[in-house]
Length: 343
Image (cartoon, rainbow, N blue to C red):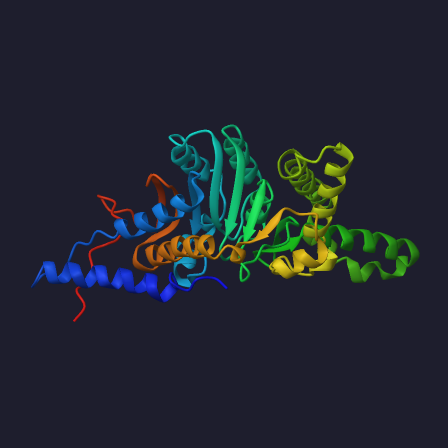
């Protein structure tokens, strides 16, 4: 069983203790300045001592509804994240790299750019998922040589979603569902032309080119992930045929709209063990209690950072170099705003 030493409660208490200690050192202060980077650094250093590999953290505060409403689509994997990836990997040595990933997903094109940047320098990449990596973040994880998934963590389907204008607003629909509806309409109207009036209000919503755009989006999503799997995760298989077949099985599972039924559906360890046993290179993070403990401690430190600051996206390396996106950027960026002392 995982070591409970670095539970969320313990990490939370470390931060609270730092605030109380700062308050005692600044008696009578209405607002106090605190140095909490040292807590994060200590836990990052402990993880580095365990792995001996450079570390990169891509963390997003997408569970916070109030923040999410404020920063909107910025929570997603975007092309602008390339700057953060370049900045935080620039001083890391080439070779192996470990990435802790917590993200709801985003742009396939941005994810493709990020993978290209990473793979120009790092030859062996392991992804650690302590909680959630969905959609394009799942695709990013599938570009790794290995994935370490906590027993409570989840990945998600990789089927592309299309933004469709409807009733004065926009909605997202699975590309494959749009394709299926078009093809169903085509078959039904060929057999029953008299049903055309029922379809007239539906089909114009999608626009003249959407059907082909959806087909291309599905094709691209599958091709990109299949290529990554063949090139990286399955690179040590001696036969190309085996690499291709494994990659096809993985992609067909993660992109199966009919099987998943929802783009937000969770894919956890038990699902992978049941459907892709001995195919996908995924390991149970909990099997190494010390590694689990230290990965989760760093994850909880980022949760504390998000809870106590306006930051909503942080890309950071094990040397402490950071790229931070936040709701309001103060004149002098600090990891935390001034705190009121606890009574």
